[in-house]
Image (cartoon, rainbow, N blue to C red; front, side, top):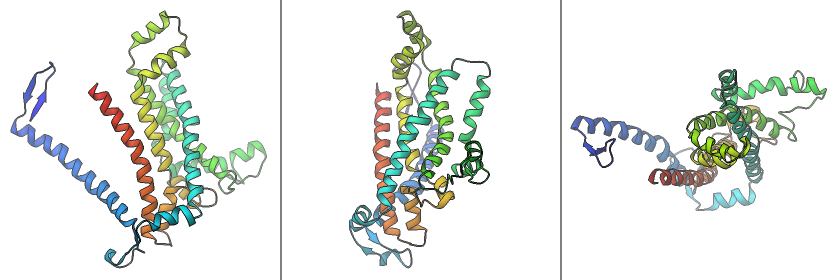
Length: 300
Protein backbone atom coordinates (compact mmCIF):
# COMPACT_ATOMS: atom_id res chain seq x y z
CA UNK A 1 0.00 0.00 0.00
CA UNK A 2 1.43 3.36 -1.05
CA UNK A 3 0.81 6.88 0.16
CA UNK A 4 1.48 10.00 -1.99
CA UNK A 5 3.91 12.50 -0.53
CA UNK A 6 3.95 16.27 -0.89
CA UNK A 7 6.23 16.23 -3.91
CA UNK A 8 4.66 15.02 -7.16
CA UNK A 9 5.57 11.43 -7.92
CA UNK A 10 7.02 10.85 -4.48
CA UNK A 11 5.42 7.95 -2.63
CA UNK A 12 5.95 6.53 0.82
CA UNK A 13 5.39 2.88 1.63
CA UNK A 14 3.15 2.29 4.66
CA UNK A 15 4.38 0.22 7.55
CA UNK A 16 2.45 -2.82 8.74
CA UNK A 17 1.12 -0.82 11.68
CA UNK A 18 -0.08 1.95 9.36
CA UNK A 19 -1.84 -0.62 7.20
CA UNK A 20 -3.69 -2.00 10.21
CA UNK A 21 -4.74 1.49 11.34
CA UNK A 22 -5.89 2.51 7.86
CA UNK A 23 -7.75 -0.78 7.39
CA UNK A 24 -9.58 -0.36 10.70
CA UNK A 25 -10.41 3.30 10.05
CA UNK A 26 -11.79 2.51 6.59
CA UNK A 27 -13.17 -0.96 7.19
CA UNK A 28 -15.21 -0.40 10.36
CA UNK A 29 -17.20 2.61 9.06
CA UNK A 30 -17.72 0.82 5.75
CA UNK A 31 -19.12 -2.27 7.48
CA UNK A 32 -21.38 -0.11 9.67
CA UNK A 33 -22.74 1.78 6.64
CA UNK A 34 -23.37 -1.48 4.81
CA UNK A 35 -25.07 -3.09 7.82
CA UNK A 36 -27.12 -0.11 8.97
CA UNK A 37 -27.90 1.62 5.66
CA UNK A 38 -27.51 -0.52 2.56
CA UNK A 39 -28.73 -3.87 3.90
CA UNK A 40 -32.00 -2.37 5.27
CA UNK A 41 -32.39 -0.35 2.04
CA UNK A 42 -32.01 -3.46 -0.15
CA UNK A 43 -34.37 -5.42 2.12
CA UNK A 44 -36.93 -2.62 1.73
CA UNK A 45 -36.61 -2.89 -2.04
CA UNK A 46 -37.17 -6.66 -1.81
CA UNK A 47 -40.20 -6.20 0.48
CA UNK A 48 -41.75 -3.75 -1.98
CA UNK A 49 -42.58 -6.70 -4.25
CA UNK A 50 -44.58 -8.64 -1.63
CA UNK A 51 -47.79 -8.27 0.33
CA UNK A 52 -47.04 -8.68 4.04
CA UNK A 53 -48.67 -7.26 7.18
CA UNK A 54 -45.56 -7.68 9.36
CA UNK A 55 -47.07 -10.55 11.35
CA UNK A 56 -45.58 -14.03 11.18
CA UNK A 57 -42.63 -15.07 9.07
CA UNK A 58 -41.61 -12.97 6.08
CA UNK A 59 -41.50 -16.28 4.22
CA UNK A 60 -45.32 -16.31 4.35
CA UNK A 61 -45.51 -13.03 2.41
CA UNK A 62 -47.27 -13.16 -0.97
CA UNK A 63 -45.24 -12.24 -4.05
CA UNK A 64 -47.17 -9.55 -5.95
CA UNK A 65 -44.48 -8.21 -8.28
CA UNK A 66 -45.13 -4.58 -9.28
CA UNK A 67 -48.68 -4.54 -7.93
CA UNK A 68 -47.74 -2.32 -4.95
CA UNK A 69 -46.29 0.27 -7.33
CA UNK A 70 -49.37 0.13 -9.58
CA UNK A 71 -51.64 0.58 -6.55
CA UNK A 72 -49.60 3.56 -5.35
CA UNK A 73 -49.84 5.33 -8.69
CA UNK A 74 -53.41 4.38 -9.62
CA UNK A 75 -55.59 3.94 -6.54
CA UNK A 76 -53.80 5.43 -3.52
CA UNK A 77 -55.38 8.91 -3.07
CA UNK A 78 -52.70 10.56 -0.84
CA UNK A 79 -49.80 9.72 -3.18
CA UNK A 80 -50.09 12.44 -5.83
CA UNK A 81 -50.90 15.18 -3.27
CA UNK A 82 -47.79 14.02 -1.38
CA UNK A 83 -45.67 14.25 -4.55
CA UNK A 84 -47.06 17.72 -5.22
CA UNK A 85 -46.36 18.82 -1.65
CA UNK A 86 -42.78 17.51 -1.81
CA UNK A 87 -42.23 19.43 -5.06
CA UNK A 88 -43.72 22.60 -3.55
CA UNK A 89 -41.45 22.08 -0.53
CA UNK A 90 -38.41 21.72 -2.83
CA UNK A 91 -39.18 24.77 -4.96
CA UNK A 92 -39.96 26.86 -1.87
CA UNK A 93 -36.65 25.91 -0.23
CA UNK A 94 -34.76 26.92 -3.39
CA UNK A 95 -36.54 30.21 -3.96
CA UNK A 96 -36.71 31.28 -0.33
CA UNK A 97 -34.20 29.98 2.23
CA UNK A 98 -31.49 29.07 -0.29
CA UNK A 99 -31.47 32.47 -1.97
CA UNK A 100 -31.70 34.18 1.43
CA UNK A 101 -28.85 32.04 2.79
CA UNK A 102 -26.64 33.01 -0.16
CA UNK A 103 -27.46 36.68 0.31
CA UNK A 104 -26.72 36.53 4.04
CA UNK A 105 -23.40 34.76 3.38
CA UNK A 106 -22.39 37.37 0.79
CA UNK A 107 -23.17 40.20 3.23
CA UNK A 108 -21.65 38.64 6.33
CA UNK A 109 -18.50 37.67 4.41
CA UNK A 110 -17.63 41.36 4.26
CA UNK A 111 -16.71 41.27 7.97
CA UNK A 112 -19.33 43.79 9.05
CA UNK A 113 -19.43 44.94 12.62
CA UNK A 114 -21.13 42.27 14.72
CA UNK A 115 -20.78 39.72 11.90
CA UNK A 116 -20.02 36.86 14.31
CA UNK A 117 -23.13 37.66 16.33
CA UNK A 118 -25.32 37.66 13.21
CA UNK A 119 -23.79 34.38 12.02
CA UNK A 120 -24.54 32.76 15.38
CA UNK A 121 -28.09 34.08 15.41
CA UNK A 122 -28.87 32.86 11.89
CA UNK A 123 -27.17 29.49 12.41
CA UNK A 124 -28.76 28.75 15.80
CA UNK A 125 -32.02 27.24 14.38
CA UNK A 126 -29.94 24.70 12.43
CA UNK A 127 -28.99 22.87 15.64
CA UNK A 128 -32.66 22.36 16.53
CA UNK A 129 -34.67 19.39 15.33
CA UNK A 130 -37.59 20.06 12.99
CA UNK A 131 -39.97 18.71 15.64
CA UNK A 132 -38.73 21.28 18.16
CA UNK A 133 -38.94 24.00 15.53
CA UNK A 134 -42.58 23.04 15.03
CA UNK A 135 -43.24 23.69 18.72
CA UNK A 136 -41.34 26.99 18.60
CA UNK A 137 -43.39 28.21 15.65
CA UNK A 138 -46.55 27.14 17.45
CA UNK A 139 -46.03 30.34 19.47
CA UNK A 140 -46.35 32.25 16.18
CA UNK A 141 -49.07 30.20 14.52
CA UNK A 142 -51.40 29.45 17.45
CA UNK A 143 -54.97 30.32 16.50
CA UNK A 144 -55.82 31.72 19.94
CA UNK A 145 -52.63 33.19 21.35
CA UNK A 146 -50.23 33.18 18.40
CA UNK A 147 -48.10 36.18 17.47
CA UNK A 148 -49.23 36.19 13.82
CA UNK A 149 -52.96 36.33 14.57
CA UNK A 150 -52.29 38.88 17.28
CA UNK A 151 -50.58 41.20 14.79
CA UNK A 152 -53.06 40.69 11.94
CA UNK A 153 -56.23 40.40 14.00
CA UNK A 154 -57.22 37.19 12.23
CA UNK A 155 -58.24 33.85 13.72
CA UNK A 156 -56.65 31.47 11.20
CA UNK A 157 -55.62 28.02 12.40
CA UNK A 158 -52.27 28.05 10.58
CA UNK A 159 -51.38 24.45 11.45
CA UNK A 160 -54.89 23.04 11.14
CA UNK A 161 -56.36 24.70 8.05
CA UNK A 162 -55.30 22.75 4.90
CA UNK A 163 -55.38 26.00 2.95
CA UNK A 164 -52.53 27.46 4.99
CA UNK A 165 -50.74 24.69 6.90
CA UNK A 166 -48.34 23.62 4.11
CA UNK A 167 -47.08 27.17 3.66
CA UNK A 168 -46.81 27.59 7.42
CA UNK A 169 -44.62 24.51 7.92
CA UNK A 170 -42.45 25.41 4.90
CA UNK A 171 -41.75 28.82 6.44
CA UNK A 172 -40.83 27.12 9.74
CA UNK A 173 -38.60 24.63 7.91
CA UNK A 174 -37.03 27.44 5.85
CA UNK A 175 -36.09 29.27 9.05
CA UNK A 176 -33.84 26.33 9.88
CA UNK A 177 -32.60 25.76 6.31
CA UNK A 178 -31.46 29.37 5.82
CA UNK A 179 -28.77 29.18 8.49
CA UNK A 180 -27.42 25.93 7.07
CA UNK A 181 -27.11 27.35 3.54
CA UNK A 182 -25.56 30.54 4.91
CA UNK A 183 -22.88 28.53 6.73
CA UNK A 184 -22.03 26.44 3.64
CA UNK A 185 -21.65 29.50 1.44
CA UNK A 186 -19.66 31.37 4.08
CA UNK A 187 -17.20 28.48 4.18
CA UNK A 188 -17.06 28.49 0.38
CA UNK A 189 -16.53 32.25 0.16
CA UNK A 190 -13.53 32.00 2.50
CA UNK A 191 -11.85 29.75 -0.06
CA UNK A 192 -12.30 32.08 -3.05
CA UNK A 193 -9.03 33.58 -4.24
CA UNK A 194 -9.09 37.36 -3.46
CA UNK A 195 -7.15 37.95 -6.68
CA UNK A 196 -10.27 37.04 -8.65
CA UNK A 197 -12.24 39.80 -6.94
CA UNK A 198 -9.43 42.29 -7.55
CA UNK A 199 -9.23 41.31 -11.23
CA UNK A 200 -12.99 41.72 -11.61
CA UNK A 201 -12.82 45.13 -9.93
CA UNK A 202 -10.06 46.23 -12.31
CA UNK A 203 -12.28 45.15 -15.20
CA UNK A 204 -14.97 47.50 -13.93
CA UNK A 205 -17.33 44.95 -12.38
CA UNK A 206 -19.51 46.06 -9.48
CA UNK A 207 -20.12 43.99 -6.35
CA UNK A 208 -23.17 42.23 -7.75
CA UNK A 209 -21.53 41.52 -11.11
CA UNK A 210 -18.39 40.22 -9.37
CA UNK A 211 -20.44 37.83 -7.25
CA UNK A 212 -22.56 36.37 -10.04
CA UNK A 213 -19.94 36.35 -12.83
CA UNK A 214 -16.82 35.43 -10.86
CA UNK A 215 -17.45 34.22 -7.30
CA UNK A 216 -20.62 32.16 -7.85
CA UNK A 217 -19.20 30.07 -10.77
CA UNK A 218 -15.98 29.42 -8.79
CA UNK A 219 -18.10 27.98 -5.96
CA UNK A 220 -19.53 25.27 -8.21
CA UNK A 221 -18.73 22.41 -5.74
CA UNK A 222 -20.59 24.26 -2.98
CA UNK A 223 -23.50 24.90 -5.35
CA UNK A 224 -23.74 21.19 -6.13
CA UNK A 225 -23.67 20.32 -2.40
CA UNK A 226 -26.42 22.86 -1.69
CA UNK A 227 -28.50 21.44 -4.56
CA UNK A 228 -28.24 17.88 -3.23
CA UNK A 229 -28.84 18.90 0.39
CA UNK A 230 -31.93 20.91 -0.55
CA UNK A 231 -33.40 18.06 -2.59
CA UNK A 232 -32.77 15.53 0.18
CA UNK A 233 -34.11 17.98 2.80
CA UNK A 234 -37.37 18.28 0.86
CA UNK A 235 -37.64 14.49 0.50
CA UNK A 236 -36.89 13.60 4.12
CA UNK A 237 -39.13 16.31 5.56
CA UNK A 238 -41.08 14.29 8.05
CA UNK A 239 -40.86 15.12 11.75
CA UNK A 240 -42.40 18.59 11.43
CA UNK A 241 -45.58 17.43 9.68
CA UNK A 242 -45.74 14.29 11.83
CA UNK A 243 -45.87 16.18 15.13
CA UNK A 244 -48.54 18.52 13.73
CA UNK A 245 -51.10 16.06 12.34
CA UNK A 246 -49.20 12.90 11.30
CA UNK A 247 -49.00 14.05 7.68
CA UNK A 248 -52.73 14.39 6.99
CA UNK A 249 -55.22 17.13 6.12
CA UNK A 250 -53.07 19.08 3.67
CA UNK A 251 -49.66 17.99 4.97
CA UNK A 252 -49.27 14.74 3.03
CA UNK A 253 -45.62 13.95 2.26
CA UNK A 254 -44.12 10.74 0.86
CA UNK A 255 -42.06 10.17 4.02
CA UNK A 256 -45.20 10.45 6.17
CA UNK A 257 -47.04 7.98 3.91
CA UNK A 258 -44.19 5.47 4.40
CA UNK A 259 -44.57 5.66 8.18
CA UNK A 260 -48.36 5.54 8.05
CA UNK A 261 -48.27 2.28 6.08
CA UNK A 262 -45.43 0.49 7.85
CA UNK A 263 -45.82 1.38 11.53
CA UNK A 264 -49.35 2.75 11.51
CA UNK A 265 -52.63 0.92 11.87
CA UNK A 266 -52.49 -0.30 8.27
CA UNK A 267 -49.35 -2.47 8.80
CA UNK A 268 -48.85 -2.78 5.03
CA UNK A 269 -45.12 -3.44 5.04
CA UNK A 270 -44.84 -4.23 1.33
CA UNK A 271 -46.86 -1.17 0.29
CA UNK A 272 -44.89 1.11 2.60
CA UNK A 273 -41.63 -0.38 1.34
CA UNK A 274 -42.67 0.45 -2.23
CA UNK A 275 -43.18 4.09 -1.19
CA UNK A 276 -39.77 4.07 0.53
CA UNK A 277 -38.19 2.61 -2.61
CA UNK A 278 -39.62 5.45 -4.69
CA UNK A 279 -37.97 7.92 -2.29
CA UNK A 280 -34.71 5.96 -2.48
CA UNK A 281 -34.67 6.06 -6.29
CA UNK A 282 -35.34 9.81 -6.45
CA UNK A 283 -32.65 10.49 -3.82
CA UNK A 284 -30.15 8.22 -5.58
CA UNK A 285 -30.46 10.17 -8.83
CA UNK A 286 -29.29 13.38 -7.17
CA UNK A 287 -26.63 11.61 -5.07
CA UNK A 288 -25.16 10.04 -8.23
CA UNK A 289 -25.07 13.47 -9.89
CA UNK A 290 -23.29 14.84 -6.83
CA UNK A 291 -20.73 12.02 -6.68
CA UNK A 292 -19.98 12.27 -10.41
CA UNK A 293 -19.39 15.99 -10.04
CA UNK A 294 -17.13 15.57 -7.02
CA UNK A 295 -15.10 12.79 -8.66
CA UNK A 296 -14.74 14.84 -11.84
CA UNK A 297 -13.46 17.79 -9.78
CA UNK A 298 -10.96 15.52 -7.99
CA UNK A 299 -9.68 14.03 -11.25
CA UNK A 300 -9.22 17.45 -12.81
